Image: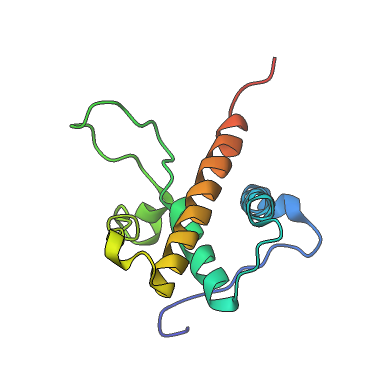
Length: 135
């Protein structure tokens, strides 16, 4: 870690207002994930995969205005700060063919993709409503 110049900075214990923004973001992800999974059981590998993909979705969300024009520049996302560019989600680009539907790995993949898609739709709706001004 020293070689990479990584320095840990912790927020004050029992003082979530010091890191209020990301604490709130973590809470919203946890609450949405609990609602989505319910009593669904995932093994450790499935849960890790789902969390990694959710992490990617959250860090690929736009932080700036997204225009309708295709020629507009990409919206600024947390990934621009983390990796210096936008993120390309390859997991949603291919789907198993009909012949391969019955393979156990494809069923697991499809189940994971459904969980992630459901999570994203629900989380995005809840996240966007936090920006609506209250009158």
